[in-house]
Structures are given as structure tokens and as C-alpha cells.
Image (cartoon, rainbow, N blue to C red; front, side):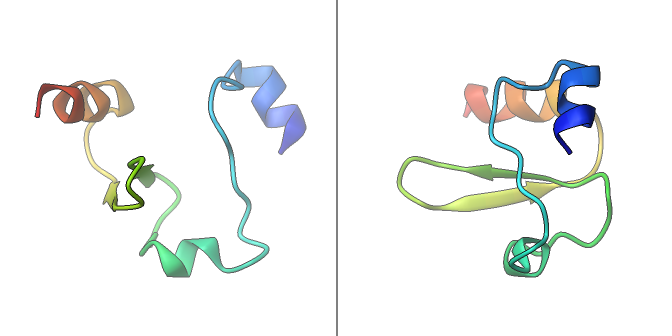
Length: 61
């Protein structure tokens, strides 16, 4: 995972592996799933479109 992060330049946010069943807890069903966790602990998953569009949509809310 560290090599992937370095190679792709995505070190600006936390990355989690599935060692503790993180995928199951947040309802991740496929590789292209992003989980957004708010400061208050609420969360949302997304697996369609682009990450940029998802984040811009969340910011606009």
C-alpha cells in the first residue's frame, strides 16, 4: 500500500487496508468505493463518477 501511495501521489489523506474488516463496516462492495467520514462521525460511501465530482458535490451541500 505504501508503494501505491507513493507512486500515485495520494498521500494527502488517510488510507486504510481491510485488515480489520473496514470494507464490511462501511459497506464497501467493490474496489472503486470511497468512504467520506465527517468530523461528527457520520459517513457516506460512493462508487460512481469521479472522486473529484463526489467531493465537490459534498462541499456544495
